Length: 425
Image 1 (tube, helix red, strand yellow):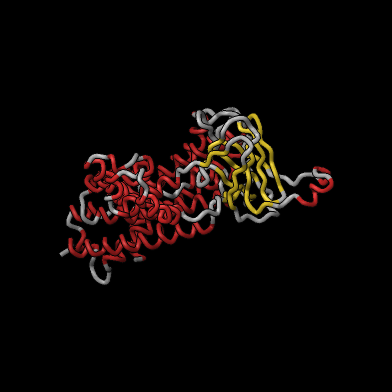
Image 2 (cartoon, rainbow, N blue to C red):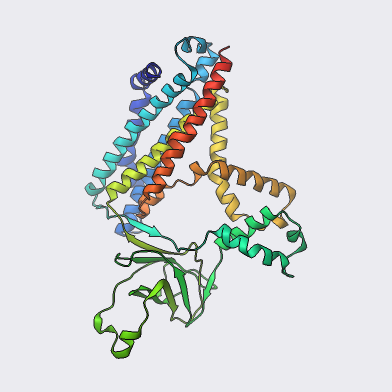
């Protein structure tokens, strides 16, 4: 493995690939921020800067890892040099693992340069990063559990179409789960919405809410958010996304008997004091934001997630390279990568599948299968998290490293070794 790594790394170092990628990273940091426009605010400038630069570097790293890996073994097979590379005591697995480690080392160097440039370039253009924040969602049961509880009553209802009642239970459960994720709570004037949260009360909290009314998502929102002994009013706002700080009211806010009897709610409550209905999706539209750590630490976690993603793509590219020619491997990788990125949207935005044609049902089934097997690729969003100030959880990073950088690469490298042994005979 060591010899295979050194040979592959020496080829990358001496060739133009290594220096071209480093130059592209420097160019992205120097040129791209001047090509985009923000909304004129500090937050808008900062988010656009991070999204454009980090997004470009992420795309560059992923495409380069996949492209290099797709041609790493195909050329040796076509030139019939593979038997010479597998001369004992070199095993097929050590050859594949050595190549993968070389590509991973290349990615480490590129991302290390990007990390340092982003750290020093932001202050140089007048953008001082703020600390990230931890996003807490309501402590609701999983959507699948809630949907399973509703399924029997849904199937017994007279309003449920007969074709739905005759459908497989798995399809009905998937339909109800999607509806539960998009379910709206209507808060009429004077009414109060309650959402359970398990966030420490001593945190300096902020409510982030995406609100809408029956007619528009930008109608005025008037009301008061309360969580334990903190509250935050909001009124006459026309933004689609709001952040409402929660603070403890002064001691003289309540007087007499009301001060002693006012209950401390364990839930986040919103009382609608406006004149229009407010529609909120409990699972999507309301979050509690708590203080996190520094931008530098969050940048490091985001960079590590990209590294894990590049490692997964490199291992997959080697697997394709072991059995396909380089053009066919690149084409196959591009198609599968596009399908992995588009499948979640196709599943979440597809209308009622029971009214779909046979072709649409087949396409939806394929999209669900792709989503299930490519979750490691489609669910990672380090660029969006870093730009929006969302603290990437350590558990999420650990899962990404364990799956994208260990489990899946080991599987693909084992399959690559198996194919190499077959091809070398």
